[in-house]
Length: 395
Ligand code: FEO
Figure (tube, rainbow, N blue to C red):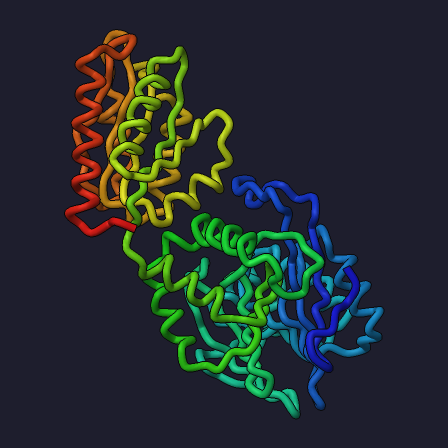
């Protein structure tokens, strides 16, 4: 992508990665992503805000050439992760006079991760400012969105917030600003679920911290920018502050059909009782969709056969993932099947130790589900619906 002017003297110079399908060797990217990098030309100083993934360094370097940038005074590193910091060494090679502006923690990380020399940094404290002549940058420390060193930059004269991962979305698009709010809402929620949800309480504090800034544009480092910032700020507030919904997330595996029958029956009964169910066959599901569903679900029900005396390993993986993502889910249960015994329930319960969650009576059938198993699932569905109602999870 070529440089795009945002307002006079401020450009987006990063790269669109249309074809990337996996991030951190873990997170699916069905819509690709972008690594946004911004150039700000002040009357006295020129600043590059974040860089790009090293696989796309040529795009950034060519864009700077196209804009005939002879000198860069500062490179802001909001975050140590290499999709934003990974091209800093190449920038410093081309612009050796540039200093890297980072939080003290980020400096330490970049020295370790990228071998940047300590003397090439300027560290900034929370709320510290740097003048570019006619423009002022204020650095706001926003730890744990989603690493401990993260910060954002507020451009005072133009009311632009450069937010790096905060408010980002993995979408490859030529749109400068959000045009399809439905698409961006879903992608941002998924992104929040995948990397930010475990730090929900700290993110709440960071949102508070940004409340008094007048923001006209949010310029994240993934996905389109926001010229109506309240759209994404309101969404974040709802994910961070909102009560769980009247929803059950049901990830499951079935080997020979018994667990499938259990799951289908339970889903039908829950739906009859007015509970929304999101069912995920883990052999085919996109784990990003599963993570997104966990953001505001009141209950998780895990469906598993018993294999080698425990839960199916793919189900165990989903449980480990849910445990790491720490959703605010309030209730959990397990349904499934066994042939001759085993400890699927005990093993799964041990895997979700981070979740402060009430365990509702599991239902496991021996072989094919029988009438008594369906009746036990009726009771489970009734308990779930009742718990949601009692707690006011009626949305
Ligand atoms: Fe987009 Fe945490 O890097």
